[in-house]
Length: 223
Image (tube, rainbow, N blue to C red; front, side, top):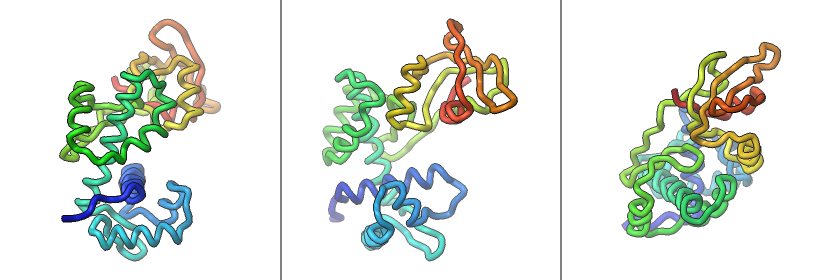
């Protein structure tokens, strides 16, 4: 029987999955990108990647980076599933705000109990999205991302419902909360400023707000 991955191994596999997902046209994920994502030395990354490859969780091709094997992808998706289910629980049941849950969920995601996660999933009503709008993988590793558009790509007169955020850093989430931008907010573009692509938007048809192009590039809406 293959031993359960360690917490560190799960973190590496999750990082490789997310980096590959962010750049789907790239064949493999480089050591330097993994080191930057995990804030560690490239030499340490190389040692861990070699270990994961020996376990059959990664495939490495010289000059082309690493890719998850089917087994590695399954571990990564289950780790992400646990993380996002715990985030839902923390927000819905314990009153955490969406900018407070990540670090706690980082610890809880390593709990190795399939039965616990099945019961947590059922208790929460089988949610499909986490508090930031990211899809929650199913137990068999399927993950379906809703069809969305970047707010930055909308033209004046177009709009939609805020469905997800790309940037989940604490400062950005706190900024959105202060600005009244939360999941489910109805947004309509009033004007796109030609000078810097900043936007004037209406929120829930109640008030207008101005946001920068950088903010609009980190918000996803559904029609």
